[in-house]
Length: 371
Image (tube, one colour):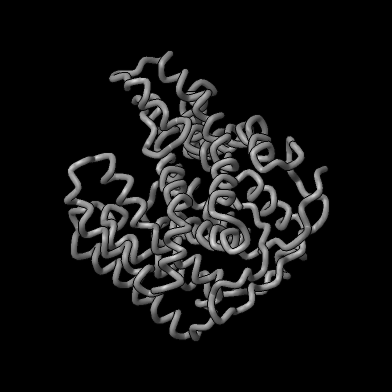
Protein backbone atom coordinates (compact mmCIF):
# COMPACT_ATOMS: atom_id res chain seq x y z
CA UNK A 1 0.00 0.00 0.00
CA UNK A 2 1.13 3.52 -0.75
CA UNK A 3 1.82 5.84 2.11
CA UNK A 4 0.00 9.14 2.33
CA UNK A 5 1.79 12.45 2.50
CA UNK A 6 1.68 13.24 6.19
CA UNK A 7 2.99 16.79 6.29
CA UNK A 8 0.60 19.70 6.53
CA UNK A 9 -2.70 18.57 5.01
CA UNK A 10 -5.83 20.55 5.73
CA UNK A 11 -8.38 17.82 6.38
CA UNK A 12 -11.27 20.29 6.38
CA UNK A 13 -10.33 21.32 2.83
CA UNK A 14 -9.97 17.67 1.88
CA UNK A 15 -13.42 16.85 3.28
CA UNK A 16 -15.07 19.80 1.51
CA UNK A 17 -13.51 18.68 -1.77
CA UNK A 18 -14.76 15.13 -1.31
CA UNK A 19 -18.27 16.34 -0.51
CA UNK A 20 -18.19 18.54 -3.61
CA UNK A 21 -17.00 15.72 -5.90
CA UNK A 22 -19.56 13.26 -4.52
CA UNK A 23 -22.38 15.77 -4.83
CA UNK A 24 -21.43 16.54 -8.45
CA UNK A 25 -21.37 12.86 -9.35
CA UNK A 26 -24.70 12.17 -7.65
CA UNK A 27 -26.26 15.18 -9.37
CA UNK A 28 -25.11 13.96 -12.78
CA UNK A 29 -26.88 10.66 -12.11
CA UNK A 30 -29.93 12.18 -10.41
CA UNK A 31 -30.29 15.82 -11.59
CA UNK A 32 -32.58 17.06 -8.84
CA UNK A 33 -32.41 20.80 -8.23
CA UNK A 34 -32.44 20.28 -4.46
CA UNK A 35 -28.96 18.73 -4.67
CA UNK A 36 -27.54 21.91 -6.20
CA UNK A 37 -29.26 24.05 -3.61
CA UNK A 38 -28.24 21.90 -0.66
CA UNK A 39 -24.52 22.09 -1.46
CA UNK A 40 -23.25 24.27 -4.34
CA UNK A 41 -20.23 22.14 -5.18
CA UNK A 42 -18.78 24.27 -7.95
CA UNK A 43 -18.63 27.41 -5.84
CA UNK A 44 -16.93 25.44 -3.08
CA UNK A 45 -14.33 23.95 -5.44
CA UNK A 46 -13.49 27.34 -6.93
CA UNK A 47 -13.17 28.84 -3.45
CA UNK A 48 -10.75 26.10 -2.39
CA UNK A 49 -8.80 26.66 -5.61
CA UNK A 50 -8.59 30.40 -4.96
CA UNK A 51 -7.27 29.86 -1.44
CA UNK A 52 -4.60 27.42 -2.61
CA UNK A 53 -3.67 29.70 -5.51
CA UNK A 54 -3.19 32.67 -3.19
CA UNK A 55 -1.02 30.53 -0.91
CA UNK A 56 1.24 29.58 -3.81
CA UNK A 57 1.47 33.15 -5.16
CA UNK A 58 2.56 34.35 -1.72
CA UNK A 59 5.54 31.97 -1.90
CA UNK A 60 6.50 31.71 -5.59
CA UNK A 61 6.55 33.71 -8.79
CA UNK A 62 3.38 33.95 -10.86
CA UNK A 63 4.82 32.19 -13.90
CA UNK A 64 5.99 29.20 -11.90
CA UNK A 65 2.66 28.90 -10.07
CA UNK A 66 0.58 29.09 -13.26
CA UNK A 67 2.80 26.53 -14.96
CA UNK A 68 2.42 24.20 -11.98
CA UNK A 69 -1.38 24.41 -12.07
CA UNK A 70 -1.52 23.78 -15.82
CA UNK A 71 0.95 20.90 -15.57
CA UNK A 72 -1.11 19.18 -12.87
CA UNK A 73 -4.47 19.55 -14.58
CA UNK A 74 -4.04 19.08 -18.33
CA UNK A 75 -2.66 15.50 -18.55
CA UNK A 76 -5.94 14.10 -17.18
CA UNK A 77 -7.80 16.04 -19.87
CA UNK A 78 -5.46 14.74 -22.57
CA UNK A 79 -6.19 11.15 -21.53
CA UNK A 80 -9.93 11.80 -21.72
CA UNK A 81 -9.49 13.46 -25.12
CA UNK A 82 -7.36 10.57 -26.41
CA UNK A 83 -10.35 8.29 -25.80
CA UNK A 84 -13.31 10.55 -26.55
CA UNK A 85 -12.14 12.49 -29.63
CA UNK A 86 -11.29 9.41 -31.76
CA UNK A 87 -14.55 7.81 -30.62
CA UNK A 88 -16.50 10.84 -31.83
CA UNK A 89 -14.87 10.62 -35.25
CA UNK A 90 -15.45 6.85 -35.48
CA UNK A 91 -19.10 7.02 -34.46
CA UNK A 92 -19.75 10.02 -36.69
CA UNK A 93 -19.46 13.74 -36.07
CA UNK A 94 -22.51 15.52 -37.46
CA UNK A 95 -20.80 18.87 -38.02
CA UNK A 96 -17.10 18.29 -37.83
CA UNK A 97 -15.18 21.27 -36.44
CA UNK A 98 -12.16 22.82 -38.09
CA UNK A 99 -8.94 21.16 -36.93
CA UNK A 100 -7.86 24.24 -35.00
CA UNK A 101 -11.04 24.02 -32.89
CA UNK A 102 -9.70 20.72 -31.55
CA UNK A 103 -6.85 22.65 -29.90
CA UNK A 104 -9.32 23.28 -27.07
CA UNK A 105 -8.99 19.57 -26.21
CA UNK A 106 -5.28 20.23 -25.62
CA UNK A 107 -5.48 23.64 -23.91
CA UNK A 108 -9.10 24.36 -22.94
CA UNK A 109 -9.19 28.12 -23.35
CA UNK A 110 -12.79 27.62 -24.56
CA UNK A 111 -15.28 24.76 -24.35
CA UNK A 112 -13.86 21.87 -26.45
CA UNK A 113 -16.08 20.93 -29.43
CA UNK A 114 -18.11 17.73 -29.18
CA UNK A 115 -20.52 15.69 -31.26
CA UNK A 116 -23.82 14.39 -29.98
CA UNK A 117 -22.06 11.15 -29.03
CA UNK A 118 -19.43 13.02 -27.01
CA UNK A 119 -21.75 15.56 -25.47
CA UNK A 120 -21.82 14.02 -22.00
CA UNK A 121 -18.03 13.63 -21.59
CA UNK A 122 -17.53 17.21 -22.83
CA UNK A 123 -20.33 18.61 -20.67
CA UNK A 124 -18.14 18.81 -17.57
CA UNK A 125 -15.19 20.52 -19.24
CA UNK A 126 -16.50 24.02 -18.63
CA UNK A 127 -15.01 23.70 -15.15
CA UNK A 128 -11.50 23.22 -16.52
CA UNK A 129 -11.97 26.18 -18.89
CA UNK A 130 -13.14 28.45 -16.06
CA UNK A 131 -10.47 27.18 -13.68
CA UNK A 132 -7.60 27.80 -16.10
CA UNK A 133 -8.79 31.33 -16.84
CA UNK A 134 -9.02 32.05 -13.10
CA UNK A 135 -5.52 30.66 -12.62
CA UNK A 136 -4.15 32.84 -15.43
CA UNK A 137 -5.86 35.95 -14.03
CA UNK A 138 -5.03 35.27 -10.38
CA UNK A 139 -1.85 37.39 -10.17
CA UNK A 140 -3.84 40.42 -11.35
CA UNK A 141 -6.85 39.59 -9.19
CA UNK A 142 -4.67 39.13 -6.11
CA UNK A 143 -2.96 42.47 -6.79
CA UNK A 144 -6.36 44.17 -7.02
CA UNK A 145 -7.68 42.32 -3.98
CA UNK A 146 -4.86 43.58 -1.78
CA UNK A 147 -5.80 47.15 -2.70
CA UNK A 148 -9.59 46.97 -2.64
CA UNK A 149 -10.81 43.77 -1.04
CA UNK A 150 -14.58 44.25 -1.00
CA UNK A 151 -14.67 45.93 -4.43
CA UNK A 152 -12.69 43.09 -5.99
CA UNK A 153 -15.09 40.48 -4.57
CA UNK A 154 -18.23 42.31 -5.69
CA UNK A 155 -16.97 43.53 -9.08
CA UNK A 156 -17.33 40.20 -10.98
CA UNK A 157 -20.97 39.88 -9.90
CA UNK A 158 -21.71 43.41 -11.07
CA UNK A 159 -19.85 42.77 -14.34
CA UNK A 160 -22.26 39.92 -15.10
CA UNK A 161 -24.83 42.56 -15.98
CA UNK A 162 -22.81 43.43 -19.09
CA UNK A 163 -22.24 39.88 -20.37
CA UNK A 164 -25.47 39.66 -22.43
CA UNK A 165 -24.22 42.65 -24.46
CA UNK A 166 -21.20 40.73 -25.82
CA UNK A 167 -22.01 39.55 -29.37
CA UNK A 168 -19.63 36.55 -29.50
CA UNK A 169 -21.33 33.46 -28.05
CA UNK A 170 -18.12 31.65 -27.08
CA UNK A 171 -16.77 34.70 -25.24
CA UNK A 172 -20.13 35.19 -23.55
CA UNK A 173 -20.24 31.58 -22.33
CA UNK A 174 -16.70 31.53 -20.96
CA UNK A 175 -17.01 35.03 -19.54
CA UNK A 176 -20.28 34.24 -17.78
CA UNK A 177 -18.85 31.16 -16.07
CA UNK A 178 -15.70 33.06 -15.18
CA UNK A 179 -17.53 35.98 -13.58
CA UNK A 180 -20.09 33.74 -11.86
CA UNK A 181 -17.41 31.98 -9.84
CA UNK A 182 -14.75 34.69 -9.61
CA UNK A 183 -16.25 35.98 -6.35
CA UNK A 184 -15.87 32.52 -4.79
CA UNK A 185 -12.28 32.34 -6.05
CA UNK A 186 -11.47 35.73 -4.51
CA UNK A 187 -13.18 34.75 -1.25
CA UNK A 188 -10.54 32.02 -1.23
CA UNK A 189 -7.97 34.84 -1.16
CA UNK A 190 -9.78 36.29 1.86
CA UNK A 191 -9.62 32.92 3.58
CA UNK A 192 -5.92 32.54 2.87
CA UNK A 193 -4.82 35.95 4.19
CA UNK A 194 -6.98 35.69 7.32
CA UNK A 195 -9.47 38.43 6.40
CA UNK A 196 -12.47 36.12 6.89
CA UNK A 197 -11.24 35.03 10.30
CA UNK A 198 -11.17 38.63 11.48
CA UNK A 199 -14.90 39.01 10.81
CA UNK A 200 -17.09 37.96 13.76
CA UNK A 201 -18.79 34.64 13.15
CA UNK A 202 -22.30 35.97 13.66
CA UNK A 203 -21.75 38.65 11.00
CA UNK A 204 -20.50 36.04 8.54
CA UNK A 205 -23.57 33.90 9.27
CA UNK A 206 -25.86 36.86 8.66
CA UNK A 207 -24.07 37.84 5.44
CA UNK A 208 -24.13 34.25 4.16
CA UNK A 209 -27.83 33.92 4.95
CA UNK A 210 -28.61 37.20 3.19
CA UNK A 211 -26.70 36.12 0.08
CA UNK A 212 -28.36 32.70 -0.06
CA UNK A 213 -31.81 34.20 0.53
CA UNK A 214 -31.12 36.91 -2.05
CA UNK A 215 -30.13 34.38 -4.69
CA UNK A 216 -33.24 32.30 -4.02
CA UNK A 217 -35.46 35.38 -4.10
CA UNK A 218 -33.97 36.45 -7.44
CA UNK A 219 -34.65 32.98 -8.81
CA UNK A 220 -38.20 33.04 -7.47
CA UNK A 221 -38.86 36.32 -9.27
CA UNK A 222 -37.71 34.74 -12.57
CA UNK A 223 -39.54 31.38 -12.70
CA UNK A 224 -39.21 31.11 -16.49
CA UNK A 225 -35.40 30.91 -16.31
CA UNK A 226 -35.50 27.20 -15.49
CA UNK A 227 -33.68 27.39 -12.16
CA UNK A 228 -31.14 29.45 -10.26
CA UNK A 229 -28.15 28.08 -12.20
CA UNK A 230 -29.53 29.78 -15.34
CA UNK A 231 -29.52 33.16 -13.58
CA UNK A 232 -25.80 33.95 -13.32
CA UNK A 233 -26.09 36.86 -10.87
CA UNK A 234 -28.43 34.97 -8.57
CA UNK A 235 -26.24 31.87 -8.79
CA UNK A 236 -23.07 33.85 -8.07
CA UNK A 237 -24.62 35.45 -4.98
CA UNK A 238 -26.00 32.10 -3.79
CA UNK A 239 -22.63 30.36 -4.14
CA UNK A 240 -20.82 33.23 -2.43
CA UNK A 241 -23.22 32.99 0.52
CA UNK A 242 -22.35 29.34 1.09
CA UNK A 243 -18.65 29.84 0.50
CA UNK A 244 -18.19 32.69 2.95
CA UNK A 245 -19.70 30.60 5.75
CA UNK A 246 -17.84 27.39 4.90
CA UNK A 247 -14.47 29.15 4.64
CA UNK A 248 -15.01 31.16 7.83
CA UNK A 249 -15.91 28.01 9.78
CA UNK A 250 -12.88 26.17 11.11
CA UNK A 251 -14.06 22.89 12.68
CA UNK A 252 -11.71 20.53 14.46
CA UNK A 253 -11.09 17.44 12.34
CA UNK A 254 -9.82 14.95 14.91
CA UNK A 255 -13.04 12.98 14.51
CA UNK A 256 -12.10 12.27 10.88
CA UNK A 257 -8.45 11.48 11.54
CA UNK A 258 -9.40 8.99 14.27
CA UNK A 259 -11.68 7.10 11.85
CA UNK A 260 -8.89 5.67 9.72
CA UNK A 261 -11.19 3.94 7.23
CA UNK A 262 -13.16 7.07 6.43
CA UNK A 263 -10.01 9.18 6.53
CA UNK A 264 -8.38 6.88 3.99
CA UNK A 265 -11.34 7.22 1.63
CA UNK A 266 -11.07 11.01 1.90
CA UNK A 267 -7.39 10.79 0.96
CA UNK A 268 -8.08 8.41 -1.91
CA UNK A 269 -10.81 10.57 -3.46
CA UNK A 270 -8.63 13.68 -3.12
CA UNK A 271 -5.78 11.88 -4.88
CA UNK A 272 -8.06 11.04 -7.81
CA UNK A 273 -10.39 14.07 -7.78
CA UNK A 274 -9.71 15.18 -11.36
CA UNK A 275 -10.13 11.66 -12.74
CA UNK A 276 -13.41 11.16 -10.88
CA UNK A 277 -14.74 14.50 -12.10
CA UNK A 278 -13.78 13.95 -15.74
CA UNK A 279 -14.96 10.34 -16.03
CA UNK A 280 -18.13 10.29 -13.93
CA UNK A 281 -20.29 11.45 -16.83
CA UNK A 282 -18.74 8.82 -19.10
CA UNK A 283 -19.53 6.12 -16.54
CA UNK A 284 -23.12 7.33 -16.27
CA UNK A 285 -23.56 7.44 -20.05
CA UNK A 286 -22.21 3.89 -20.44
CA UNK A 287 -24.11 2.35 -17.53
CA UNK A 288 -27.38 2.32 -19.50
CA UNK A 289 -26.27 0.34 -22.58
CA UNK A 290 -24.21 -1.96 -20.34
CA UNK A 291 -27.17 -2.39 -18.01
CA UNK A 292 -29.51 -3.14 -20.91
CA UNK A 293 -27.08 -5.75 -22.22
CA UNK A 294 -27.03 -7.34 -18.74
CA UNK A 295 -30.85 -7.15 -18.60
CA UNK A 296 -30.87 -5.03 -15.46
CA UNK A 297 -34.55 -4.42 -16.08
CA UNK A 298 -35.17 -7.90 -14.70
CA UNK A 299 -34.54 -6.48 -11.22
CA UNK A 300 -38.02 -4.94 -11.34
CA UNK A 301 -38.44 -1.96 -9.05
CA UNK A 302 -34.75 -2.21 -8.11
CA UNK A 303 -33.51 -1.68 -11.67
CA UNK A 304 -32.17 1.80 -10.81
CA UNK A 305 -29.93 0.24 -8.17
CA UNK A 306 -28.50 -1.97 -10.90
CA UNK A 307 -27.69 0.98 -13.17
CA UNK A 308 -26.11 2.92 -10.28
CA UNK A 309 -23.99 -0.09 -9.37
CA UNK A 310 -22.78 -0.42 -12.96
CA UNK A 311 -21.97 3.31 -13.11
CA UNK A 312 -19.93 3.06 -9.89
CA UNK A 313 -18.10 0.00 -11.22
CA UNK A 314 -17.27 1.78 -14.49
CA UNK A 315 -16.07 4.86 -12.62
CA UNK A 316 -13.90 2.70 -10.36
CA UNK A 317 -12.41 1.10 -13.49
CA UNK A 318 -11.65 4.56 -14.93
CA UNK A 319 -9.93 5.56 -11.68
CA UNK A 320 -7.83 2.39 -11.68
CA UNK A 321 -6.95 2.62 -15.39
CA UNK A 322 -6.37 6.37 -15.76
CA UNK A 323 -5.89 7.72 -12.22
CA UNK A 324 -2.11 7.25 -12.23
CA UNK A 325 -1.93 10.18 -14.66
CA UNK A 326 -2.62 12.49 -11.70
CA UNK A 327 0.46 11.09 -9.94
CA UNK A 328 2.51 11.62 -13.09
CA UNK A 329 1.27 15.20 -13.45
CA UNK A 330 2.02 15.94 -9.79
CA UNK A 331 5.45 14.28 -10.06
CA UNK A 332 4.53 11.80 -7.37
CA UNK A 333 5.36 8.11 -7.25
CA UNK A 334 2.94 6.35 -9.60
CA UNK A 335 0.31 4.39 -7.72
CA UNK A 336 -2.35 2.09 -9.06
CA UNK A 337 -4.47 2.55 -5.93
CA UNK A 338 -3.28 5.43 -3.69
CA UNK A 339 -4.65 4.02 -0.46
CA UNK A 340 -2.79 5.59 2.50
CA UNK A 341 -1.20 3.17 4.95
CA UNK A 342 -1.22 5.58 7.86
CA UNK A 343 -3.36 8.53 9.02
CA UNK A 344 -2.71 11.97 7.61
CA UNK A 345 -1.76 14.64 10.14
CA UNK A 346 -3.83 17.78 9.92
CA UNK A 347 -2.21 21.12 9.20
CA UNK A 348 -2.53 23.96 11.64
CA UNK A 349 -4.94 26.78 10.89
CA UNK A 350 -3.45 29.69 8.95
CA UNK A 351 -2.48 32.63 11.12
CA UNK A 352 -4.40 35.89 10.81
CA UNK A 353 -2.08 38.43 9.24
CA UNK A 354 -2.56 42.13 9.42
CA UNK A 355 -1.56 43.07 5.91
CA UNK A 356 -2.83 39.94 4.25
CA UNK A 357 0.40 39.38 2.38
CA UNK A 358 2.26 36.95 4.64
CA UNK A 359 2.88 33.40 3.56
CA UNK A 360 0.58 31.86 6.16
CA UNK A 361 0.61 28.13 6.74
CA UNK A 362 1.67 26.01 3.78
CA UNK A 363 -1.09 23.60 2.90
CA UNK A 364 -0.11 20.63 0.78
CA UNK A 365 -3.66 19.48 0.18
CA UNK A 366 -3.77 18.21 -3.36
CA UNK A 367 -6.84 19.69 -4.95
CA UNK A 368 -8.94 19.40 -7.98
CA UNK A 369 -7.67 22.92 -8.38
CA UNK A 370 -4.09 21.76 -8.07
CA UNK A 371 -1.39 23.29 -5.87
